[in-house]
Amino acid sequence: MSSFSSSFLFFFLSLFFFPCLSQSLRGVLIDCGASVDSVFNEQKWVSDTGFISAGIPKSVTVQVLDSTLSTVRIFPLQNNVFKKFCYEVPVYRGGKYLVRTTYFYGGVNGKLNPPVFDQIVDGTFWSPVNTTEDYWHGMSSYYEGVFMAIGKTMSVCLAANSLTDSDPFISALELVLVSDSLYNSTDFTTYALTLIARSSFGNNGSIIRYPDDEFDRYWEPYGQHSPAESVSRVAVSTIWNHPPAKVFQTRFTISQVEPMELLWPPAPLPNATYYIALYFAEDQDSFSGRAFNISINDILFYPNLNVSPAGMVVFANQWPLSGNTKITLTPLVGSRIGPLINAGEVFEVLPLGGKTHTRDVIALERLKESFKNPPPDWNGDPCLPPQYPWTGVTCAGGPRIRVITLNLTSMGLSGTISPSISRLTALSGIWLGNNSLTGSIPDLSSLSNLEILHLEDNQLSGEIPPSLGNIKSLNEIFLQNNNLTGNVPSSLLGNPKLNLRTTPGNPFLSQPPK
Image (cartoon, rainbow, N blue to C red; front, side, top):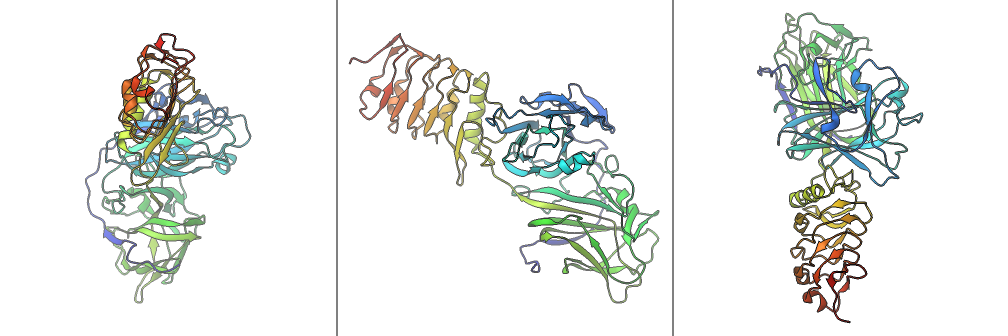
């Protein structure tokens, strides 16, 4: 691995006082599949029924200690017709949110192993979900990331991939609004962070979480190491990254003035860019003289660190890692005591996937509202990630993601066609045939790229809009087997290149002379 370049931002910050936030989580904790609200770990958990319209609630058949794991919501694949299922959670636009998903299979699909599937936040592919190993050890699995809200709702979606052999499921979903100071070296308009490891070194006890951590982050014990010890006198001020004071009560250290190596995170990492934060604090009454260099995989990470009782954090917001990771703390010449480390966090830096053009999103949402039974996967971003568009929606990339075709033929739709469909101005084809749609055909004259319009085999009424004749690109209109009335517009009859079908059906429509 080459040494870091100027493109990798590198920082050292001393700790300073930051006013504590209210000792309650600001956000929503969703107990997926539950029918009633409950209280667990001093926090209120709410039923998921107000956040999602798809899926089926189920209870697991094995005994669990955490009540939020006793139910799940599963999402039947229905022959893989629908692939993306989204929770829509109200958020503050521009707010920074810790998002955590928790999974405990409990055999709800009747198969030995849990399914493997993907998870998505808004238009960004987050990660695969593979809980098999944890499940076989009797444990739940959780995934955590930090995302900025780009709208008034944030969608957290599960999606079937090529490895998915049974229905995706989820046990719990948490969105917690965090302080602006947390991980503030990351540009959350461009990136998100997905957690790899967050550890409390020297801790042989339980996970440190709320109320010790005001945002209920999980600091997992990492104590199986010979230089672990407890510390009774800690005087760390509240930090801009807000690690809980409890993580400074244990540490890895050695008394000898010699390098200390730490293999952490414990699992090999894929070749990617990572956010790394390492936390240090000296005993309140300790004498000075503990100073060392920090290297990661033998590359200097931070030089000449002098640990103080006030505490400090060293971090890099874009650091390349691949495979096993070795952290080395090397005492400086003249140092009188060995190095120490209290805690650490590693996140993969995740480029955001963008979003569909706002105009198209609003138009599709209104179209969805006009259907009485829209496809169950019409939630989240309509076009992104590219492998998971809404059913029947085809999109084109580029600087602005646009919807270019809409094909919901034979989807059993009822309801009406919202006039907002005319705001999908990049459409070249509309196929809504063989459904049970009622009402009139909206004015589509703004769709200057429209080539194909299929509305046959519905229950549409009213007249054919003469404005269809203003769309010069149209070469095919199928309207047969509806309840249309009036005359076929002369603007359509005068186009010799247009394949126009109005029969059979439409008995009250005045047909053109033969």
